[in-house]
Each structure stands twice: as structure tokens, then as C-alpha cells.
Length: 243
Length: 128
Image (cartoon, rainbow over all chains, first blue to last red; front, side, top):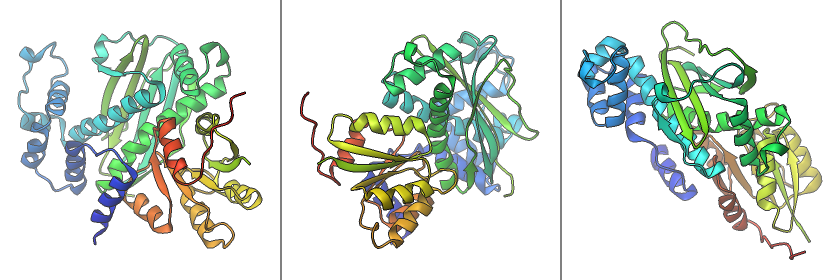
């Protein structure tokens, strides 16, 4: 019996959630480095959400779809590069892991929202960063207001926000939330052949709103809302690094 | 007599959540923040179940599991992995070493209780 068959058996036995096929397929194609645009476009065209996000990224100045100058997935891939498509694809399992973490640990339905419609973070806020290194190099950034971070941490630990005054405890919870979402995402990368390791999370209070993007890396920016809580997630990645 | 369960995780948050999950049960929870501490606590306390994270500083969960299975006194203790990592290589390696179950974070407390209940006889604490 092959390892792949054994893994499927184990995944069933342990009750793992199924992996997102388009993200896995796309990551595998990009990891190969020799996949052509048509092959990649075929996978993206089957995933309406990914297609929408890729076209939006390829038309950064357009207010709406009617203003798009880049209208096909193929043209978007040529304009933005295959690496950009992979970063967008990687955003999907990351978003799903965050949404699942909120449902499971906070009983809150987190929904993905248009970043431009979110109330921007102003001034000091909580920033969690986790890097991954290997055949793909990048970072995941999670930002939220300090009040939201306190509420999230308190709910996860079953406490009231008033009982959650210790900043180090809040940082530990936000770091674990980041670990959980990025751990799932890292597993997807490794399974696609992009082996990498996670760095320990770093969580701090900062006023700096800049997300550093290394040369050659793609950037995917996402926003989420659950009631009054707002979260901002950025992922930067360069998928063609040697280890 | 309370059932001894050892939770090995570098995250205090996870150890608190595990503690909260077992609070209604007659369980004595021991804790360790990495594999090295986990082995020491396991040797000292002889728990009936170990709940083990994978990625930890000092000694990771896979190394701890390997050493646990090499120790004649400890190898029979059932282990449930509790980790955010469900990558193929990790899962295959861990399954080969021998674990009773595997729970991927994020998890619901009742999922942990259900899996733990398949390894040890959990009894609710009598109402105060």
C-alpha cells in the first residue's frame, strides 16, 4: 500500500477535514515550476472565488468589474505572474483555517469582507506575525485592535474581557490562533511539495501598519468580520526559494 | 481515584483549554511545555494518557514520542496528538511511531473528551 493511500486511511480514521482541492492542485502546479499558464488557468477557472480575486488583483485601479482592463484568468496570470496566483490560492486555506478557528474556539461566524469596506485600524493595535521558511518563504500577519484582541482572548479562554487584563496572556492566545491557522496552511504547502518550517509567532502592540513585502514575493490582503470584531490578514510569499 | 492525564504543549492557551475541557471530569491534569519536560513528567507521574503537541521548542512532539516508545516503562501510555499540523509526512511518521489518536487544532472541547474517553475511563465529578 502506498503512503498516499495510507495517509487517506489515516485522515479518515482521525477525522481530518478534507483539503481544498483547487488550492492543493494550484500549489502543486506552482511547486513544479514548469507548469504552463493554460494548466494553471484551468484550475483557477474552476474556482469562482479564486478567479474573482485574481481578476481583482490584476485590475488594482478598477472600482468595479465594468472597469476591468484585464478580463481573463490567462491575461491576469501573464500580467501578475503565476506566483501571485499561488499567493491568492494560499489565502483560501488560510482564510478557511481562521474561519474554522473562530467557529470552533469562539463559536463566532467570521465572514470574509472586502478590505476597503472594513473600518481601518488606526494607531496602536495588536500585530501577530509568523514566518515560514523552506522551498517557500513568507510570512502571515494578523492585525486587530487591542480591544478586539482582548475580547477574542477572553472568549477563547472562557473569561470575561475584564478578567483579561494581562497583555502577555492576550499575546499568547493571539499567537496560538496564528499558530493554528498557519499550521494548517503550512501542511497544505508541504503536501504540495513546498516543504517549509514555521517560525515561532511574534505578537506585539504596534502602530506600524506597513506589511513588508520582499522582492519577488506576492501579497494577499484579506479582512474578516464577526460582529464588532475585525481582523486583517496579510500573507506574503515567494514560492520559488531553494532551501 | 482521579485519572492522570499529561498535556504537553508550549502554548499556555492550549494547556488552559485542555484543562477547561477536563474540568468536569475526575482528572488530575499534569502539564509540560516541551518534549523534554514532558518525558520527565511522564516518568515521574506515570499518566494514563498523554496529549501531545508536535511543534515545540527544546524538544518537539515527534522526538518525545520516539523516546517514549523506546522506554519500556512508558511505551504503553496511550498518546493523542493535538496539533495544527496534518501534513502527510508528519502524520505518517507519527502513525508509524504509534499513537492512539490524532486531533487537529482548532478543536472543540467535546472532540477531545470523546477521543480521550476512548483511551481512559472518564468519570464525571460528583456534583458539589
